[in-house]
Image (cartoon, rainbow, N blue to C red; front, top):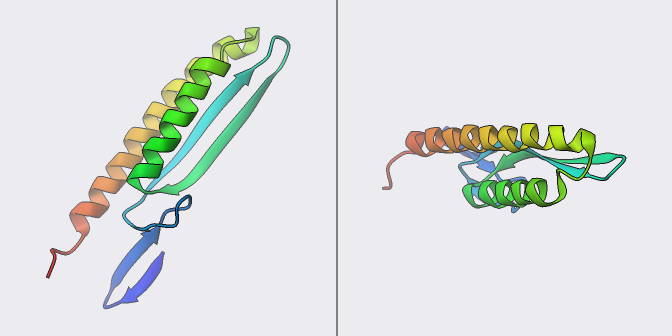
Length: 105
């Protein structure tokens, strides 16, 4: 957060460094192999554009790389729905922050 004086607080996107409303999210991707699996996460405060970019990147990664293993076949759907929940939660935070912004002068 950056304090700009006069009680105004602006937040910075962790990915693109844009100043403005941000939403908190943690996106997860499962990379399934036949005998093992790897998990990748990205969490932080994201602006609207970065929130959507990360959601689609991790969602497509789950759908393409996720189900290729016995364990991964069951983990991937959990990550898929968790990412949807994180997107909706992050969008709610963005909407609240936008509603709290003072009207333009």
